[in-house]
Every structure is written in structure tokens, then in C-alpha cells.
Length: 249
Image (cartoon, rainbow, N blue to C red; front, top):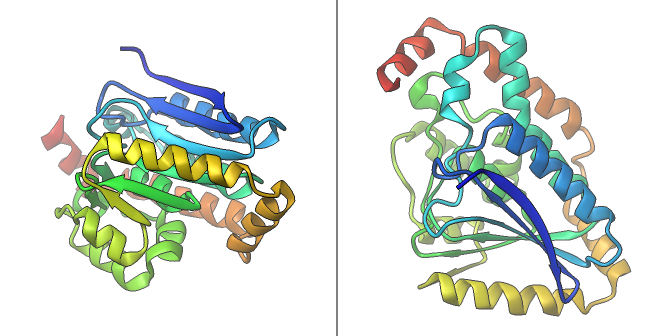
């Protein structure tokens, strides 16, 4: 299948679906389209609540495109690449509509950032999480603010330093990343639908005001995440990282 980002509307709920055949690892073009789609959904008066989900029934998001990481040749390319998830997170933060996350499977790196940037996230028991960046010589700098905001610095540090471990969905729920964990995708989808449509029936002005309260003190993130993308863009050119990436090529 070809990669895609789609938006559909049902009962005043906007369903945004992203997909890439490589375990939903996200190239720059798909990340740009995803950020644009989130912005457009936020401006659509028919939509009261947004659900963010990925296609397929296994990995929610494997992070950024590995092929693009390998192809980075200078700091400008590096910063542009790592700005991909930064732009999506900022689009989610600035969106006036509440965003519900639907995480059906494993999520790595930037995918953990997407889950953390939702306002309410539901998952299956298969939705383990991992921050693998340090193991290849960079770090989860771009997503750190949103992940730390959701699960706290202690849990963020634990995941970052234990970079080769998948942490369970129960761990993610215990730390506050997931609100609920379900046995099956079918149970997850039913719960997401019921919850989203219930929220969509509430006062839209109250929902918008609540969103702004949830994201207070983050107005500086446009600059912060840009700086973090620059950090990652520089580190990815280091001899350590280049040598590590060659082993995966």
C-alpha cells in the first residue's frame, strides 16, 4: 500500500489516519501532510473532536523514517528532518480541538511523542513503548518536552536511558500516557468511538477553553522544539551515529 494521511468526519468527530507500509515509520512528506491535516481539522467547524490513529493493526508508529536518517548529509538537512515531528507536535498543541489518541500497537521514538501530544489516549495491551534514540547516538530531544509533560521527568529519563527496552502498555498507563488499555483492537475502537462522540456533544466553547488550559505554559514550544531539532540534526552527523547507522544499513 502507498503511504497516506486521510481525514474523515462522522458524528462531528474528525478521524485522522496516517499510514506508511514500513511499520508506520514516518518520512518527512507524511509528517508535513499530517501537521497540515491536523491544522485543517482544527479549523473545520463541522469537527468538534479529533481522533488520531494509524493504519494497520500492528505498529502504531515506528518513529521517523530510518532511510531518511541515513541520508542526512549536513546540519541543515538534519534540522529539517527532525523538525518533522516537532511540527506535528506543535500542530497538535495549537489545534483548538481536543485530540484523542488511538494506539493499537507498539510505538517507538517520535510515535511516543505523538501519543503524548494527544489530550486523551487509549491503547491496546500490545501498545508497548520505547525511546531508542540514545542507542544510535542521538536522543529524544524533540519529543522530550511533550513526553516529560505527560509522564514526568523520572519516567522519561528511565525510558531514555534504557533505550533498548520496550516498556509495557501497563507501564504507559501507570505513568499517565494511556488513560485506558484494552484487550483487543475491536474493544479499543468501540471505546474511542463512544468517548469521542460523547465529547463532541459537549459545549464546543468549553472544550476549546479546556484545551487551552491543558496546554498552558507551552507558548514557547515553537522556538524550543526548533532548537531541539537543531541539536538532533547536529548529533546525527557524529562519527558514533554514522558508524552505528552503517550497521543497520
